[in-house]
Length: 162
Image (tube, rainbow, N blue to C red; front, side):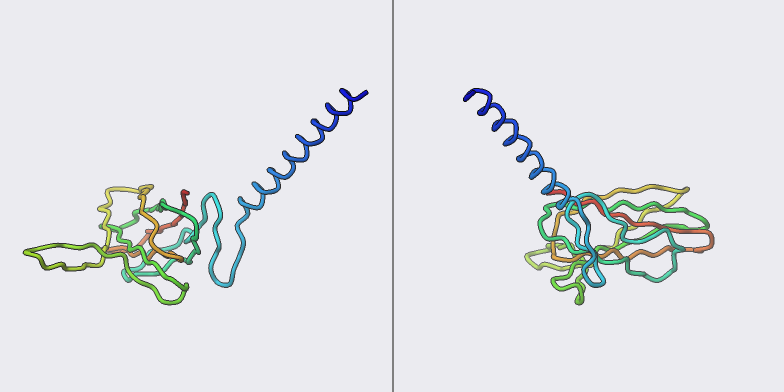
């Protein structure tokens, strides 16, 4: 009788732990709305629905990232009549004040910061993926087309990694 009871308890304990783990996983996978930004726990998120590009930078939706080390930004671009596509990554501590990603150039001991503006020269429609190190509490992507924007569009997606 004692052996049956202990096996039954073991099975019940294992089932209870599995239910707890599944609940924690389901909570982690959930993406919850928080104000105008999206709080992301795991997986990917759409930052910009497929929309026509303009010749001036247009900001995507922003997203709050709190526990990630790297992010991957995925662009799905329809060329249309574009010559090239440009984007900038922006970070924010509060989701209101935005700072451009910068790069440093060192010449004779003098450091010059320059805003990073990435350009993709297009020969046709393209899906493009770029990894970035995590740098802030919130992130948004600015996108624009160069040349004639007729028939062009772009969607932006984000994937985050612990």
